[in-house]
Length: 335
Image (tube, rainbow, N blue to C red; front, top):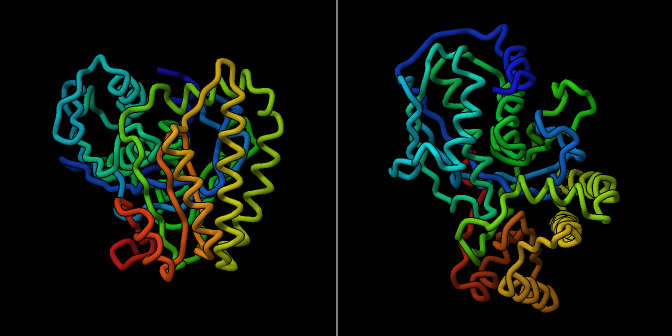
């Protein structure tokens, strides 16, 4: 167990309540970053170089149930996971931070993802957020959203944003202790906005976001300019959300994603999350815009594409992309 992380958790839980339940349950939405987080100033506490903004994917994400047990047992989509896998080891290491606070040597965790795992659709973000929320439910800590965001960040940086539904900003923070690096809800509802998921390859990535990020920061000559560019994009995106300006939001989010992948491809040895189908799909989106369809793309660390558009473009979007999955982030079920 990492002592720095343990002391961080101890600070947050020092004034928490305790009212134990037999089972803790929680759901957390997946999110897509409109302004990407890429690169850490602190690997241990998962502190980013730049702030980021995301939109949650409504009812797409992770549902988790957790019980105390004598040993760790993990189920993902009703299948037991070998304790020696990378997934299990990462989960156990994270749970080490909470065992003494939960008075449990082990946990039985059952998680159901309704998004592909490790395919660039933020399954780790919703997974760790759901786990922290379920722990909070199990123990009766009664933590607020800021505290939950801080804890989720230790599991996966983007998980700090999946504590919320809607538009969310993750503040990079400046302090070494990491207590000022947490997410906040942007209090804007935009009922007309839609997110489309174009699934190009749902298989597990050959390299994790965590490893790719580490190698990119260490070797990409283009990385040095990334944090300042991202902060500029973030300001534009934040203002466009407030103004509900889909053109500025979409065009800036697209620029941000393409810039991030340009920086990633400069890594030695080269890392390219795009496939030929990804490139072709981006061209199709550009052609739609030339035909006066207001639609923009964003791509996280994977080959799958997410598109942003308003409800009035739905017919044209579905006509072009027959297999697309449409999400209404501010629908009644996600309010």
